[in-house]
Amino acid sequence: MTLVETQRFVPPGLDHPAEPLKALRFLRTLVRNPLETWPEALFHERSQWLGFAGRPLLFVMDPAMVEEVLVSKAEVFPKAPIVQRAIGAAVGNKSIFTAEGADWRWQRRASSPPFRHGTILGFVPAMAQAAEAAAERLRDAPAGQAVDVSEAMMATTFDVIVETMLSGRGSFDTERFGAQISHYFETVGWIAAITVLRLPTWMPYPGKRRARAGNRFLKAEMTRVIAERRANPGTTPDLLDFLIAAADPETGRAMTDLELADNLLTFVVAGHETTALALTWALWLTANAPDVESRVLDEIASVAGDAAIDAGQVDKLVYTKQVIQEAMRLFPPAPLIPRIASEDVTVGGEKVAARTPVYVPVYAIHRHRLIWDDPESFDPDRFSPERSKGRHRGAYLPFGAGPRICIGASFAQVEAVVIFATLMRALRFMPVPGHRPKPNTRLTLRPDGGMPMMVARR
Image (cartoon, rainbow, N blue to C red):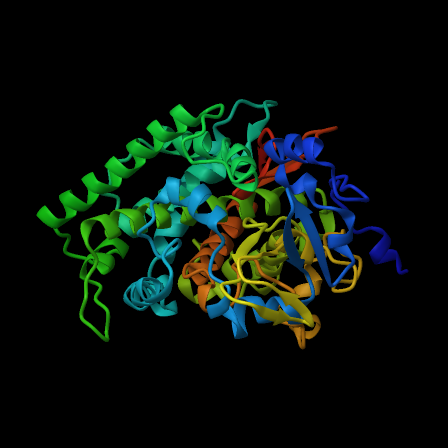
């Protein structure tokens, strides 16, 4: 082991059980943090059969098996029912995220144009402006007082969504919007437990009433924005204009207002939540790795100097992007991809019966001891062009894989690089002594209790 390797930062991890948890402890842990129910075997085996209430469940970690489930046999593995129960209630069942089959395919085709690389680069000035505004807010924080960086990043990426999707015309109550999303996410452990037990959807659980009220507020906001846009279209198209004008190139079908509302809510929720978390973890990891911080600052100075990050510079911030990629490896915003077999099928030699849930545990795959060298350490160089060459595409899944790969993946990566570079150049982020952030699965991988950090001007 070299000196460099011994100095790599290793973030504190979770204690995963050596054996699958017994029923009662499993349910208690599932409600608290589903990630902590995952047995240690998921981090060193190719696949693992688990069971609960007499029902088998297959976790697949081997990249070749992952590729079968998500790519070559994707038609056989639609999204599992837990997706509809946990996410459908939040963003609706008519969106590109929750739809299946032909309904999904035409929405995917119709929604693709605004997410093309050239269009995304046109949004870079709005991303840089939102990042500069965030830096100003953070500069104004009281000296010596910790700031919750996760909240700051949520506000920043929400600003980006409002500017790029709605040209700043959404008139959103940002704080209330974010609070309602968080209220819903806090109930996901209960939804998972009820789904595992195969209980009816009407079953009460803590926070359900508040979460449902929040969902109604979010959907009403989307409906209001769409109605306002139809009545007053803008002169320069934004993402909402693209969606309204979108039509299936094969059939000419356009989205109904219900489909528009569900998709707009999906893009707003997923688009700001996942990028904000990637930035939160990246800022904290870099604050604990001075060598990484120094290299990031040198690259930003070399590429952009003191000027705002522009579209032509994004691809030149190579190491900065690697830091984001490594943060999403250690703390993938979407830590689990749930699927279900629609027919009897074989995956990697494993016979899987129809209706069997098949889960791709992204968090475990990204820390798997047979896939990655020194998997627990923070090492952005593992994403250098040289070391990335030949890596199996089933080994790294921050945005999923195959036909259902996140449509906003390129948008999120460009946004994260622009915001991260802007903030790093302006501010110094420092970890709070003794604080050990714990990842908690609430649909996305959030730091439990937020991410308090000290922030100072550079």
